Length: 367
Image (cartoon, rainbow, N blue to C red; front, top):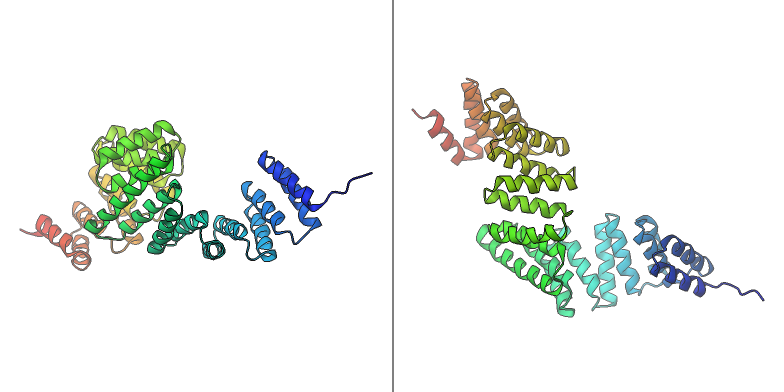
């Protein structure tokens, strides 16, 4: 007698294959379960999960949409749908799915944590804090919620003047420290803690944390970058250059690391190398006013005034209200004996940045 395969058997087989890491075979099994019973929300959800883990997000999204259509009050399906929307870059749809999961299951910690993280990305920061605090209330021992709450505090701090910002940075430190108490080897929290110490000007503490992190995870490019930033701010330029070069080795298209390396090499008076680092930054991120201004500064320092003026003009093209670039261009014009050009930039500065205009006048025009 030949046994007849049914949807439950295929679903169970898929679950076993999934647990064994045999995802392609799991997809086939779950697909068979769906074929036999198209309205089986659990099989559809499982199929979506298998597609998701192999990064086939379009197929995962389709499966989760079918699962939640078959069973609208399926909290796990809505949560997974939110994840698939997020990975597909559809943030508003992801937000709606997470909210639906929470509506069905108010104590759904993972959904609240992911919603909070997504709200940070959407710059809805106060609402993000509310969701993450609720996730922590529901499950105080979840290190991810504490880490994400810390990051929300940092993003709020970045929108505020320094005294108020510092208060939020301190809150972020507390959240990261708690995340690390719960999970001592939590590399994301260590990196975030080092980064916020940099923002607070606590560079020694940043170096201590980030050195520990890169020893644990030497291939963490962002941690190497943050370590380089801390060394730079302590004027330890050799160490800064080493960390930034390591960040670039790990992530060759790391434009911010190239820019910081350029600044480090400039401070070390390695001007040609600084120029190359800034040029590489601009090849990766052409519309970068800061880097164009920095490149002009190195050209000026090495008395290449025409090239300096061109770089400052590019910085102004990208960001017309860049007072520092206008100031630098005015100085470059003086070095090129173009007094009219310098006066034009001085007049621009009087509108854009009266303080810089006064400085230029007192240093270069006042007799």
